[in-house]
Image (cartoon, rainbow, N blue to C red):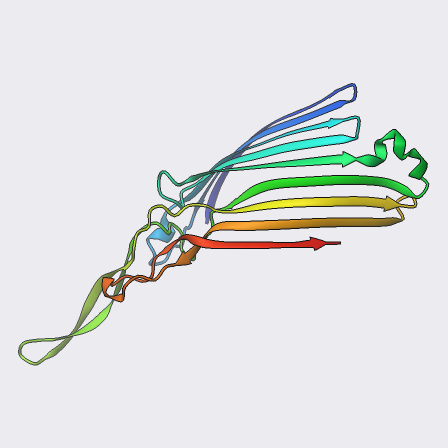
Length: 231
């Protein structure tokens, strides 16, 4: 295989008194070529991705923290008009133990932090085939009964995969609320997270009438949600 990867990044860090500001902008593109595609023509095509990611974070006096992230990604795995996805996220934190009113508790509770986050992730590796929006043919052999009564075997072809051109990114939206507490000079730690996730546009096969002659096509029809807690 041959891979060409390009990445460029700009980073910024600055402290103004009690204010800390950090920013980052990242560009990347990736191309993968299969040098041994076999008999599959699609496997011989280059697989390309391109993306832009950014992060901006701010902290005040070590007490209050906020971070915003974004990703704008494109993949040739999808048809034109459906290749790009925007995936933002935000996180907030509050170090309660840095407040002056917390001082009487420091002998027992070394630090305490509340945090929360919300974000989206995109998955372009969906389905078992690359370029799932492209129709494909199926080839085989069949027996043909001739007018003179003879039977002949010959090659056949039929449309196997129906083109569904609006296939796009599978997305997962996550929300998390957490609490971190350290006791007795960090000798005892407690971490708690409550989360819920929802995944949309999962690729599923949809049944179509058998007489159409196609295999059941794939489309973004799936949805799943989970929630729970970690301690």
